Length: 115
Image 1 (tube, rainbow, N blue to C red):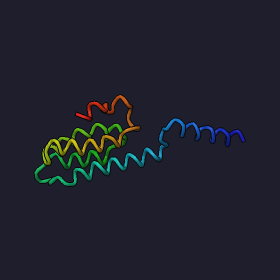
Image 2: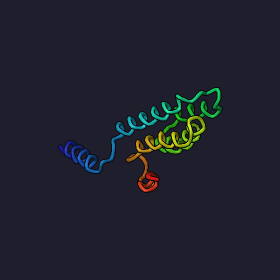
Image 3: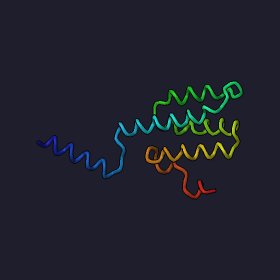
Image 4: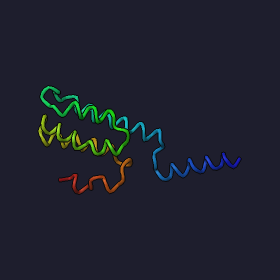
């Protein structure tokens, strides 16, 4: 009986704290990984030597923090191929996917993204 009550209490506390479960976090990481790879899919790998390495790094990233830091590589490749503004627009959409998964102080402020 105590275990059941404890599990219910833990479940309710988790929902109230808005912390994603491990399964939810893993699913969101895969969505982010797919979005990053999709963004790079439009880049011709013959012209961009860094693209295959970025693909490999994104595919092998073990956690959300690694993907977070790989955003700069994605931005560089997108900017080189599509132009800086287009690269920033695509990266901004990906960055919002990280909200709630990385510490709030790592996320760009609203004021910075409005520029």
